[in-house]
Length: 329
Image (cartoon, rainbow, N blue to C red):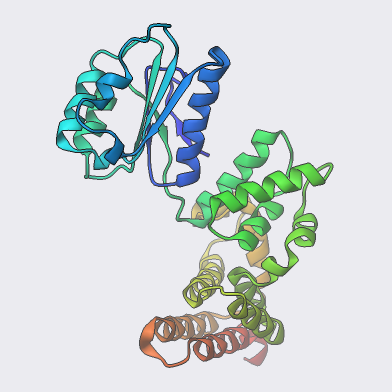
């Protein structure tokens, strides 16, 4: 979920939400608005884009009200504000008005950095809303969603949900809400499977799991299902690469407890156990052969071949064969 700084009062004079994850940005706004309306049900909320915030507009919005009503002024895409409007905002930051909460949504980065720095220097409450591009980040997000509801979900269930839903945080949050509402007790992998069987079976990680386990027919079936349901070929090659690399990393690591290996290899402990089961039958030569197959498939799906589906099928067959290389030695 969005990370906040130590001064975590939603009614702070200025809240700075930084990042490009739309769900987290929207939540940051909703949190401030909810706190303001809890303090004053008649709170006036103004939600503005850069084209609506012209020079002088902010001064009008934050001017004292005859009835001293509370206001929340939300400025989206603050990095795109005009130079003159940025001057207005910076001037306001030096002396914010009472009963008014300004919420600045900024993408971060170099564009509009002067405003970002000014808000931080003024002591704005900051909420980090980074784009979650890594599977580990999305997994942490799902765990956080379950914790927020006060419900328990196993690590395997959280991973299965990420595998099934994908990278859309809104869909992940919605899935958690549905599971919490419909299921009593601890939510496990079997529960997630019942709710999201079609999507889970079509996920790129299912293709990878079946391939590295040497289950050729099931891997090909999952691959065809994935492609037919619109999973991007590049996501499948990425999952295959992750699966094979995990086998290689764990097979070359020194023995130890899952927790110790997890720290050494950057994997969650539960995944160490899963990869240990998958790596039976693999040899160093098999890992090398599988990595070459993934590289060829990656080139094929990125324009180096005429048929991405064929490139992926060839890679899956090669990986599944490599998974049984010890038995062929």
